[in-house]
Length: 220
Image (tube, rainbow, N blue to C red):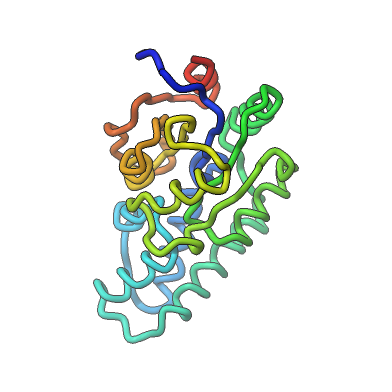
């Protein structure tokens, strides 16, 4: 591990695939929603969109599949299918993340969420796990003009935290998320979540297989 010249003041968490183990469930929901419109795709097709906003995903799918519907129709179908799964099984946590959040907060770090999910979805998750008070700010992909892999969401989070990119760390599980963090100039931990599809995390400064492995990195 290389020595850092700046102290770690803040940690920015992605949500889907990092706090909640949701990417597989989301993919199943998206596939089911598309079947309503006569479009059949596989898991690999949906996993291409891990880490991006629902608006970007919807616009791309409609264009690629030449669907004659309005984006809102497909977004509503996606949300309805996801709600069915959530009502059935609740939110499944990524093992070790909630504990990591509490430990980092206790150590005095500022914490943020920067997720492509909507503000309502983010709030529902942190309320569910009773970690709302742990976060100094949350940033949704809907708050910025350009979604991941653009760096906008992370740069916005850094501004709200009143920190510099040198003093922050990002924890991500997706190819586009890691790319966004690196473009923003923020040191990045890539978390290998087997339920997030075949994500390329090679650009991450560190790669971990379990969230507990983040703490030694963040203690440097």
